[in-house]
Length: 315
Ligand code: IYT
Ligand code: CU
Ligand code: CU
Image (cartoon, helix red, strand yellow):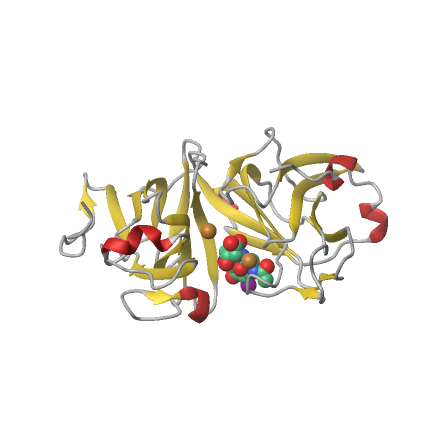
């Protein structure tokens, strides 16, 4: 029973001199309406750099639609929990590190890979966001303490996990128009990264989102998914690396059918987003944990995108 989940203190637990776990839980919340986004923040509990090596979700399937973990420089609020649909997640820099969604397990981090967090890495806070879907199960006024346990270590990991986010900032979807593509592409100019998981995100109008590496004119799929399926991280299609000189590209396919006005990129559920997240690891010696691409790419480049990128995934 979760009725008394608030009263239990959940400090970090030490296993030995290097390893510990951190419990991040909603502080006994009762969402007021369906489709509420609530956030809670917690400082990374060590002055030194630390590495997340595993995630253990504790989510009540009846109420939690999805759950995201962010690293933050400054959380958007100092309250024990807040409405982050309205008030935002982080004040400035933020990065997603984990996603849980119903029926989709998170891929394990590969061995020797960790997300680096803490004061020195510029992400001194964890922020947990929970999307409460149907609040029917709160009819009994119980309090919710869903959340996440992080397995952490202060031992430097040989490889650092990171996120490469491709997102469109300028897509406009015309009402009634059957197909609108949002294309994003950037030249990759850093040290090699090794993608192992991907996540897609759009709102209601997204049909399929695909991400590719383009090397010497050859397109290789990183991942392709319907954004209408649970928006978790899925394992990449095959092992590949991205290195200096490659191009990283993504396409989101939208439909304007059913709309009577133009749809723009924005944060409400009537707006749209086009996101393709690549979770990768990189040698610790020159790791760059967060990269992004917001360029639309060239028309010429996207003439050569594989046909599968235009095929909607039935849900
Ligand atoms: C305008 C847009 O596409 N926003 C996305 C991607 C995004 C994530 C983060 C943009 C920025 C960020 O700092 I983290 I600037 C967006 O909001 N995506 C949502 C989550 O908020 C992460 C999603 O579910 O992917
Ligand atoms: Cu959700
Ligand atoms: Cu969005």
